[in-house]
Image 1 (cartoon, rainbow, N blue to C red):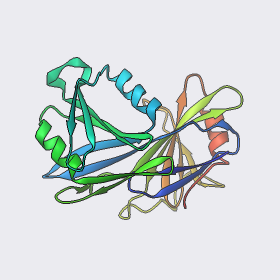
Image 2: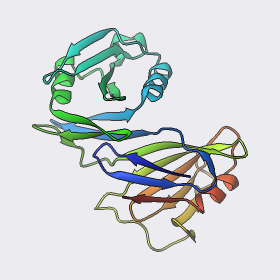
Image 3: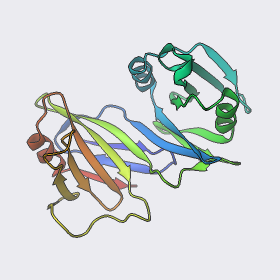
Image 4: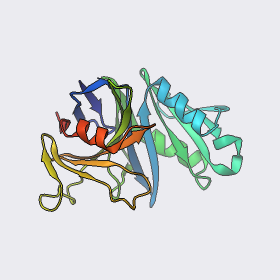
Length: 228
């Protein structure tokens, strides 16, 4: 099964998982940077936003109109005014959402988001920072893709764009497979996972439910993650 996913900077990732029974819609993430601070933004559909609000136990309680006319919805994270604000902007059929720390004022948050141009692009959102806001030089772009397998198991495929200053590893341990270099996490890792390193992405396969690392490794051995 193949799916095209839009990174928040507009790059297109093509994910191919031959033994997947379904590739549900994904969430793309990037990190904005201004005045020495960072703000993580996520792009996803209605279900992704609902999951975010449910897991953070947040309800939107206010709306502010940004420069350009976009409606910024906000609510205290977990209902606690001291825990920062969750926020969302509707962009086409998708949403740009995230969480701002308690030290980030409403004025600062609105200023950041007013300085970016967010446009619907296919099934995702392309964000173009402007003014005093840029992409963080310390972070990369990622896509969280759930992979459903025919046997009822599944895993989370966390694709992370390789930065120019961190080229893919060409030597060392691992198994050469269709999509790159396949390795497993060390037994001491708190969260077991499988890693696939390709020319453009480092992809982490993280078990969902009772899925085994053996099953995930078998799936990722035939997977590819490339830029279009």
